[in-house]
Length: 342
Ligand SMILES: NC(=O)c1ccc[n+]([C@@H]2O[C@H](COP(=O)([O-])OP(=O)(O)OC[C@H]3O[C@@H](n4cnc5c(N)ncnc54)[C@H](OP(=O)(O)O)[C@@H]3O)[C@@H](O)[C@H]2O)c1
Image 1: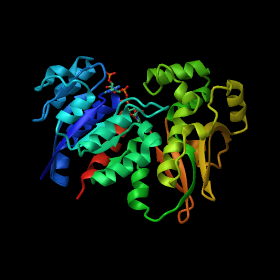
Image 2 (image 1 turned 30 degrees about the horizontal axis):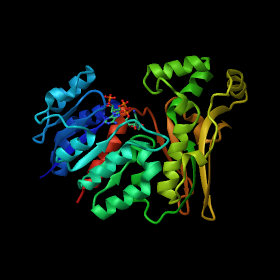
Image 3 (image 1 turned 180 degrees about the vertical axis):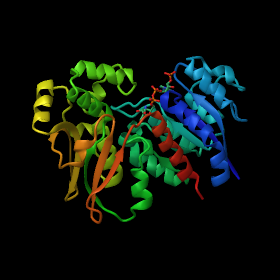
Image 4 (image 1 turned 90 degrees about the vertical axis):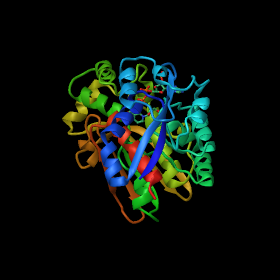
């Protein structure tokens, strides 16, 4: 039986779901993987920080977070000065970094992950920022340290994408992909097909928790562009900045355009695509009319999908239905098990 100490930085939707999933899977991890764990630290920005190197009360931490209470009441150590102090003191083997994404620079998550590697931890994140802004730096540093840097949940939540190429498709050359990678815009377009205005559809997405108060990151295609950049950078081996991707969101699509498309038997979708040719990549995020001959036609609501074209498998599709913090948490758990497997 091997025991791991875990630290959770960021304890919002994803961090709490991960804690709950770890509790739900505790027996399975012990019986099937000979693995036990303790959570020794949780850090937030404005809801306190907790360190207990003997393992903190996870249920109590979730209860406090759900009530919006301060977590530091659970601490057995004096309050850490900041997140770096928390990472240094918590004696964790693995850091899960689930703070909000910074599309422009990837910070402060890159610094959190770098510092955790310096403390010899595996680093696992659902945060896209460090992948698009510091993938090769963090991957090289992790390799030098003999630790893992995994980030399955950054694209299509818990669906296997990066681990698929890493584990199941050795020596496959990816030369193109296309798909629907932003579920919020897909939900907005689906609601507009059903008669809602753009504003009503956005309000609905905010109500069910898939769009932020300022939804422009989704609507203007930034979230999709960051995911395309992550896939290209990691799977095609060419660093791509999200700002270099041809990008247009769904803001200008009118209800009339959507209804006319329906009359023609077509649908508007925000399509992500990338193609590698002669060592260069052309990548795009753009609204497109899709007919029923495409597998993307049937991807409605929050469904996302991607079709990979490799030198061997010409059209390999991954479809994910009903994503949410729980599926994101599963990607993090899978990364943990893959990172520590013998
Ligand atoms: N939600 C999903 O299903 C999903 C799917 C894929 C990827 N992701 C990614 O997962 C990450 C977390 O998403 P989420 O939905 O859980 O966000 P969230 O609910 O807003 O939670 C963010 C957490 O990070 C904490 N935090 C913010 N800045 C911090 C800092 N500088 N140091 C320490 N803690 C900090 C927040 O603390 P306070 O609450 O005290 O401010 C909060 O606990 C994001 O990068 C997101 O893009 C999410």
